[in-house]
Length: 178
Image (cartoon, rainbow, N blue to C red; front, side, top):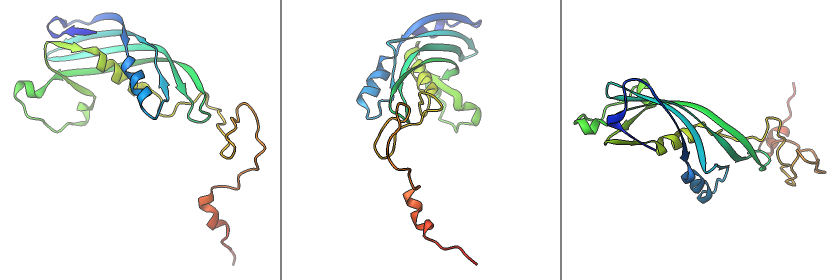
């Protein structure tokens, strides 16, 4: 969805729309790391307004995402329902200003230039930021046996209990005494 910069009011305006995030699916299909699969469209609720030259956005998106568990490697579904806020400021290059060092308060800012703002990349960015860093099907997921690969959530394996971290084996040979 695109919004004309000249039509952004001073008072908050609310809109609802569906945003296609198919490029995220394509990105994850092409990468070696296929942790997520997204619905064709996400429902987005957005409130936006102008504050001087700055444009402020408050919103929320939701949709069902398929993720691959980082422990057991099984696919599971979860509802992604996240709120977001961001501010767009005019591109400094457009007004002849030089690039300046960013302060801590500027880290949430992005720039706009031109007569229209394309919301698609901004929504995609918010979706990526909302993804879990390590997806888990459930907090108590037991994962895979490191020896035979059995999914320990479904069945027990007959492997012997691990002795410990092999990198620490040298320390087990040390004699501590008086």
